[in-house]
Length: 163
Image (cartoon, helix red, strand yellow):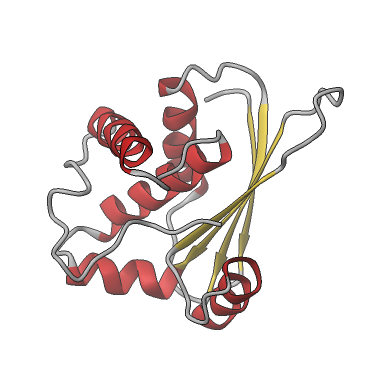
């Protein structure tokens, strides 16, 4: 997406996808959902301690999670392109990719798309919302050449989590 201002903060030593991949995945999610305006967001790559702190603080869950999204929720009269922030926990992405027998790139793409959809207001609180969100994720990831993300999940896995 040519009109995307993506600010990447990598605070974890592990390798993360490059900016061009992250932009492609976020841009694909924006385009697939009909978002065609200028967009600005921050993607922060963190370790387990920082993710645990944020997950505890904002979701009252005392463990690290794979992805958190923080929509900007700006007042309607402000015409700013800011969508919000996404945090991805690099160690959990790697661990889950291995547990789910997925490529690391596919799991990164899934979590980045998932976090982007949350910034756009999609959620999985109830079954109908979850079904819509999963269908969107599957379509977006399919457009990008990745397999459907939930088909490979085993019973010990969970949906990506966001506040």
